Length: 150
Image (cartoon, rainbow, N blue to C red; front, side, top):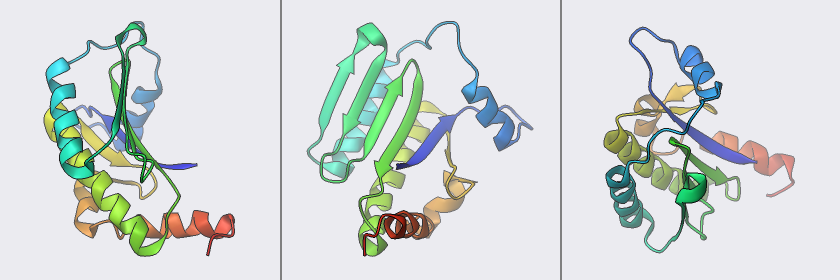
């Protein structure tokens, strides 16, 4: 289980639900790889996370950043960006992880021109970023409670 963020392009007048549906549709071919955007996201991620591992496999159209300490992953697969973080923390630690996640998500959105959507909260990043991670904490705590982590 993980806390996920989606990146998508919304057409004018398109609802979030419609944009999310179009994200689910299969593509005939992967979107072209943007090396400049990838390099900028790498730099932005390093600035927020410090040490991280990077996986790049152009043969399968897959690029990924992993931060071992938090489990946070930023992925670019067949032209689609995503971010996930496992529910390993709760309360203030979860909030600190989400501040990092939101900071990188904002950079990805600015670099790529895509909009970021937080499906757990049901809001775009532009609406939840001001919560400084607080909006996500109940989701982390709820999962921790399900698994008996106190």
